Length: 125
Length: 276
Image (cartoon, rainbow over all chains, first blue to last red; front, side, top):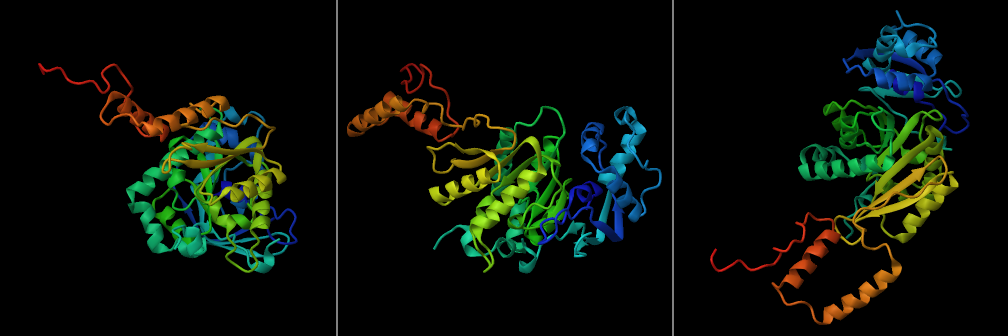
């Protein structure tokens, strides 16, 4: 699971959970893979992200060094910043571990990089 | 015995390892899935040359995702079958994958996707595979959470295989109830094989539905009526085989079915000269 997905993922499908965001990450295995840098995509996606959540997610898996805590207003011209954002959004992948819902404490296991968001019958709204 | 996979087993069981394997080896499946995804992307009407974040619902082994990548987009896929997702991992697709059931809702934050595509997945929602499954409720949960996850003015395009008219109606009512505008576009309605159903849903206000392929000559109702009468007249006296009229009719029929056909010229159906 890439951190861009984590930034979008919620547990609001659980019964009784309203926001279910952000899910906390507990990672036992983190992988870094090379992905082609696409500055246009990163510029387009940054306004949609919750940067604080991204920063703390990166911090919780130990990949926050060098990553600014806030987004500068003129970020689209700062290639250095876009490269850092690219690395943290697309190249760092959580392979094994679990996600935890902030409201119910329900855990979603991540195996082989795929988070399992399947619910049981009792948990469906 | 019906041949529809939805009637055989629930999706997470039907798409087992053997079935998932087919999706990497069968070039026909790969080809068709690719073509349908291309058409879905066309119907999405994304801003030109801008890389977008798309949601692939029922991404399976990532065949559709590969097409999205080729179009320069980033995608996140969700599917209920672990075996299919394993194949997607093997194929090393660029998109990110999630194991989730679309009938339980789309587990994403509001407004994060620029569009959603789904190839041959929606028909699975009509089934009640567990005692707790209620198709109408699952459809509504799916559409309402999807509506929330899309950004405004985004579209969602689903290629699907409906069994009958009432399924299409059920789909559109639930989608409208969730706030979407749109409808079903049917490509090549005159062909049994090439006929394809696309549910096109829009979030930002109603806009005219895109035109279906292979329907160029059915724009006027009156014309159709006359054409039918002509057709019945002709049926009594079908053109003689191997004549030019017979050939033109045959070519017209192929064109309607969306098959590749050479254009009609003055040479069509003409005898070679004796000197040849």
